[in-house]
Amino acid sequence: MKINIRMEKGNPGERCEYCGVDMAPDSAYVREIHGEKHYFCCSHCADKYEARLK
Ligand SMILES: [Zn+2]
Figure 1 (cartoon, rainbow, N blue to C red):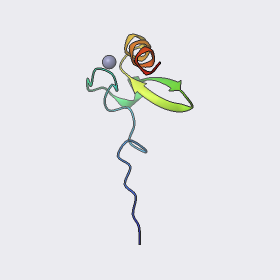
Figure 2: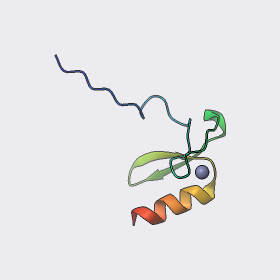
Figure 3: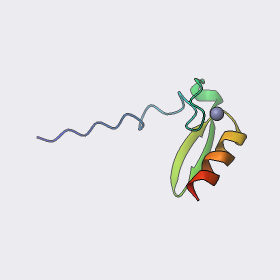
């Protein structure tokens, strides 16, 4: 039996994916990049994260 554990799914919005700051899930800034949802503390971090992927 194979068990896949994916930490980031089902428990989103706890940390900004760019700067790593803790945040409440309901205050997270969500942006969809390349079809996947990413969670940030603010739009600035989302912009920088997205720019780094390109
Ligand atoms: Zn941030």
